[in-house]
Length: 333
Image (cartoon, rainbow, N blue to C red; front, side):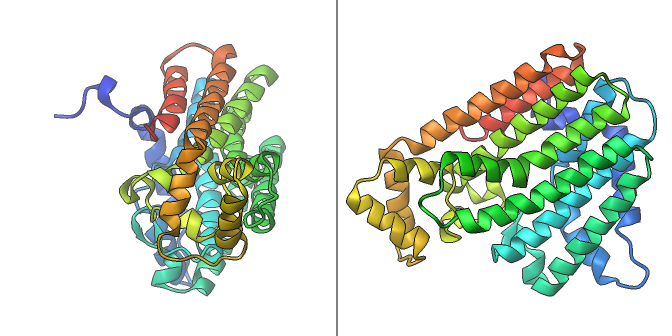
């Protein structure tokens, strides 16, 4: 017997509500990730796409379109587009970060090689552009093409900002808006646009996706220092080992004394990490309240996402999107 609806997680309730649409999205994804001449493409793609991801971004597209009254076929194409863009960025990210685990499984670059991950990621980006053209809506194409460029820009910005202790919260937010929130907001905005929604509703759903994406990434950055490997699908402490200057560290550095600052310079800027350094970092984050304050900021962004929905029609889909924003932050309780 299944869980009572009130006991289900918000993304599970949303998935159940959109089950028919999601089946069509999954079928389209499988159809378009095929390759007649290069069997490695579906092998690598299936390893990631079939790995049990929540399909959160495609669900946001489907929910936005349905919330705005859409009853045509093209929200399916846009949802698949969003998932392909997301999967392509994950393949590339794991190469850049030299990651060994994704969603609790070995990364594609570990199972195959970096060349396969990069080239299959390129293929999925190309496929995503083929898909986003098919609805024949220039405004939707503009939204998703701009998001693709913003994501790439955010990743490059992170390369230069990640290991520099001078990185500010403003720059961090710019990185987050690029690498994470851009696709969330494009997912919700494109769903509203394909439905022919009013400007007020399109803007509301875009703002919801932006704020939700920021909250989501802040929580991910928190979980890297306080979550479990099962929860985050990667190894706890990966951001530390990869010398990423995320919000908790930025806030701890801002309050650091000379000795603490020397520690952060050694482990983040110079990359000279030794046994016990992660524990030391955790202690400094706790001492300066950096984890708690980051959670508070993530909660503020989640509430901002919820307020964005006030102008939209009342109903179960809107309620689920409101609950989803709460759930994103509740992962760190």
